[in-house]
Picture: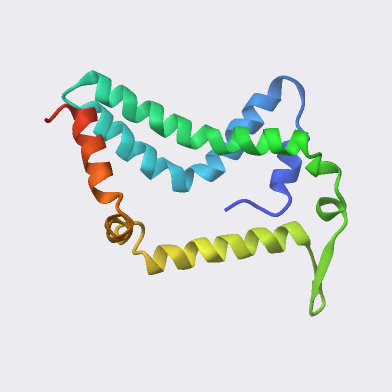
Length: 149
């Protein structure tokens, strides 16, 4: 668990220790991405076609980095860091004053947790794929990538 203020302290690190601090921050986040990476590495290593394993690893890397790049571009383009919502907005709940961003993040984490319970992780989503007509498409894509046709 990350201690309160630890992320803020890590973001102030400059110089040659900045890379170490970044790795440390990603290490805190690794408790949820680590098992997924382990599964992806296992599947990639056991793939009979090396290109399929490479494609799986590239897809994982793209999925992990694309949202961060999109957020960074939007952050710079729309000057999100300079807006008042992220600087001084506080919401009072009882005697506690919480930054608005912490409340938004909390709501998103709760929504994500509820969706994991409702969709049984993501296993129940396969029925949704069939309902909207993507079931056959994903199967054909998998067969094409793995060369089983």
